[in-house]
Amino acid sequence: MDPVLIEVRCLLNEAATEWEYISNISLQIGYPGRGGNTLWKHIGWLRDRLLPSGNAFAQAEWSKEMVNHVLVFDFLPVVPPNQFEAERSYRIRKNVTDANGRTRRRRSGILEGDYSDEHITLHAIYPEPLHP
Image (cartoon, rainbow, N blue to C red):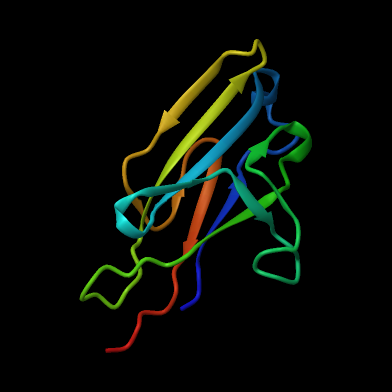
């Protein structure tokens, strides 16, 4: 079964006025692992123009200089017992560090599918279901 892929982009461009007040935006994505534990990742693959996930990885952190980085997080699929589809729920922990050094943390509830807010957008790609 193919991995679960979650693509993350920053919605702010280099000229956005928000960068006057924000130093950086960092992100962690949590996905259910085997045994019910949440697996948190803060490092993703840098998207390559040719591949769904590139051959270099980076911290999930965006600043004015790195707004064009597109990261792809990969997770092993977790298929619940007696099911045919991989688990489709994940969580987000986002930190916005202000120019004065103060950090604001935002956490999401359980999400399924795509997500977007004022800073980032996530697109989830799930593997094809298993056939019985």
